[in-house]
Amino acid sequence: MGLLASAGVLLPFPFYYWLWKYPQRWVDMCGKGKDPSKEMAKVSHLLKLLQFLSLYSVSTLSWPPPLYYYPLFAFGQFLNFRVYQLLGESGTYYGVRFGKNIPWVTEFPFGYIQDPQYIGSIMSLLACLSWVPLQYISLWILGYLFMMHIESKEEPATRAKPLS
Image (cartoon, rainbow, N blue to C red; front, side, top):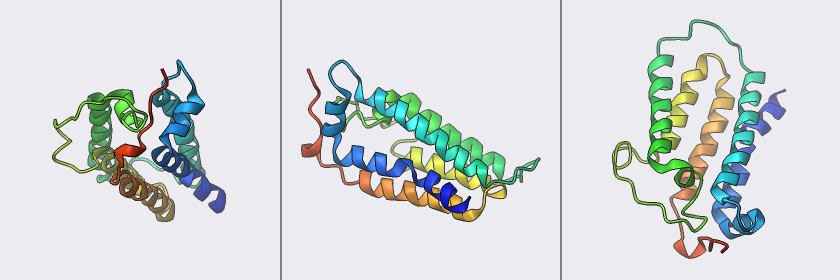
C-alpha cells in the first residue's frame, strides 16, 4: 500500500506543473466556449479526492485528536477559504496563466503571508500527523514546496492567449 499511497499523494503535481509551464496547450485542449480555470478545477477536485483516499488508506484514525490539531487545521482552512474568497475560481486555478485579467489582491492574507493557500494547506496537513504517517505528509508538503518554487517564476510571455 505504501508505494500506491505515495503515488496517489504525488498525483496532482505533474498536472499542475504541466499547466503552469504550458498553459496554452491546456487552453487549446479545453477549446472555445470552455473556461480553462473551471476545467482545471474539475480535474483538480478529482485529483484531490484521489490524494485524500491515498492518505486515508495509510491512516490510523482515532478520536479525539491532539490539541494542536484544532488551531493548525482551523487556521489552515481559514487561509484556504480566504484565498478562494478573494481570488475566486479563476484566480485560484491559474486564470492569469490562461490569459485572464485577474485583479491584484492586497487584502489579508496576501501581503502578510507568502503563498497563503499553500501555507494553509501545509498547516492542515501537519494537523493530521497524529493519524497519517510522517512520510506521506512530508511527500505532500514537498509537492507544495515544489509548486511554490515553480510558481514563483512566472514568465508573462508564456501566458496563454484566450481563444475567441
